Image (cartoon, rainbow, N blue to C red; front, side, top):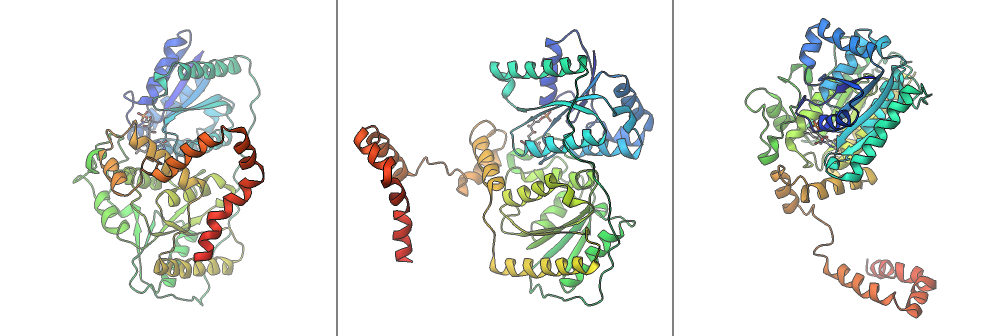
Length: 460
Ligand SMILES: Cc1cc2nc3c(=O)[nH]c(=O)nc-3n(C[C@H](O)[C@H](O)[C@H](O)COP(=O)(O)O)c2cc1C
């Protein structure tokens, strides 16, 4: 069988993900694997349509396609995202339609599910037959059982292709049913009172609703919001994945383009940040993805901690719960507060007006009160993954993260919590005694559990 591997790593052949592919290739030498470095070669693919068509020709001739990519900031790398956009822009969907597909990622499992959901949605949009997805931890290949499981996955994929098995679609098609947003003339304004408000966008001339939402929003902040368009920021390219930033957050692009200065001076200094963009396939544009990837020079530190973050979205956002989760997860792991997400999915413009007004009012209010709502599983879970990874496997090369985590109490596992450790030892021994165990796990547990809460309440 001929299998085309669409490589989503900016590092091309020198990619961790490609080592997993190489392992599969080694074990299934009867199949031909054609590897296309689409994320690394995105510049060429964009500028030279013939090179792009050579890839789609390979896909057309393939028995199966493997979307093999590393996780990049909740999703795929910006170059891969751009490749996905080109498929539609250049009307190449027909090369993918009906093709068997598999999704293979490497990552540290931080929001790997949102990337998988995204790519599965893209495959469904392209009418591909997704036979399976596999999320490998980036070091899994060193474990025998993980290698075995990867081979099981591969074999299942090849068998599904051979057997022409049916594949369930998971995501319904996205319907674009927007209506024009016409802002009302009566706009309530709020005084940001010295707070720094920035609106970052990638809005283009033709994106009328988005531009109007930004104008309305700026007006509501009494004209005190600064608007930055990513098209005007000097961004030389996407994240290289080189991890030069790991040591002291110096990006490989430092001194070579304007992104780091822009991020440090405009984003990090703001109190309220509004991200404004339009839906492009099942995410925002690849330019937005470049923004989020390039911000990785801050590595795994929540550099937007304490800020109010809002989103202005034009397009069918409500049909994309996965994207909502990305925004929520992003805000929570940043230890920031999600001040709201306003979209243009309302037939009545005054509803949008009202929501914009509320987002402006609330973000100012929350910023003044320094209110950050507690993280849910998304933020708590994400933080724990980073904590464990930086403590262990990836402390080198992420030296700056390790220092930050030490200095800021991120290493909060119960290593120094001696009271808890002592209690665990004591009760661990006590519950081995049947009579005590019966008593504790009987009626006593419920009353004992709330006892400290009651004591605290009595004091408050
Ligand atoms: C800029 C950047 C962003 C990343 N974002 C994520 C992420 O959101 N979630 C995750 O689990 N791993 C993330 N990773 C880790 C990579 O996915 C992981 O190291 C992967 O194995 C790299 O594969 P590659 O060598 O094929 O590019 C990120 C790494 C980099 C450099």
